[in-house]
Image (cartoon, rainbow, N blue to C red; front, side):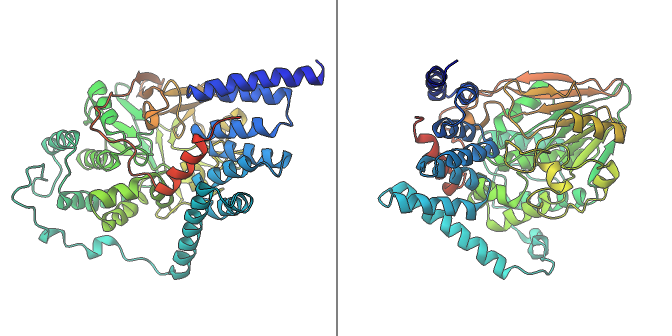
Length: 485
């Protein structure tokens, strides 16, 4: 095919991709932008457009890579700087984002949106620098030490659920779920009581939790829930409430994105207190301060309670285990495998998890994110079937279960059945249209059984995604509101 003919075909593919993008079918948009690039790999616009589609699917690493490639092809392509700045903002790389916003403002001094993003990003960079300057190497005093929960008063007009003699009961949990379903707030005294108690329970657990299922026993594994409280209730409606005979494992990312993260996490913590040996929670990358600041949970806790309570949530999150092994054969973690060979289960056991995770590379970071080669999420890296095979063989495991990524069907089986992804937030962010799923594992054969479900249709009075950082939201809105070329 002659070059002119290839370029003409590439343009048709780009237009096809643009139409899919307008219809919010981002996966197909990405597919046809990719095909256009295969015919004409030197077109900066194709990379920029695909970067925008990747932003919409939260593949920030791929979006960053495409924006960078667009700028390599055309250093004057201003949209490339916008795309790259947005990707870096979403990844918390504010200095890198600021540099690109500076470029945009210099080239387009009358662009009000660009100027606003530059000012907001600059403010964050200065704030981070100030926080580092006043940070102390001394051990921080726990929020628990400054609380006087016993003397907190529950007002007479509060008609909601209360702990019984300071303890979570099944009746309390049923009342709590009904209370939350009506969008009512649990009294702060009860919330503090639960957080203090669950911190104590979690702090006694190892970084790698190991459980055994008898032949007739079964466990349900759920993926990301991301503040989608009504979908969490639907899981319990479909699959039964947690109990000693109906154990659950929730695989991280309980909070952020959705507007009901407080309700989700307090419900999950309540069941952890009620059934500590049969209800399991693992940490995800959204159980971290940076993510909570950007994607809504910090703002939600401050709106519903106080900044002090968010600090306590942060302390509790740091004690969440990082991985779980079932019958010494199935390993469950939020993110994925590692950036180097030779990692063993014993290495996971030895992780000192009571901290914020490092930015990249370390075993703790990869367990929360994903491993090997450049990651489409932009954090850590991705891993292939060869990595999975070597890890399983070395650790005498059958397969791994992870979450962390939205899947159209709610789950995905890859690497010849040895790597399973499960995602339990249907119609993620109220726009992705994906199904949710959970997995049943029976002790007799550990063969995964998948169950799919669709999103609960919410009434118009329920606000969605309202606590996300205005800076991050506006940056992404700017990018996604721009049309593809």
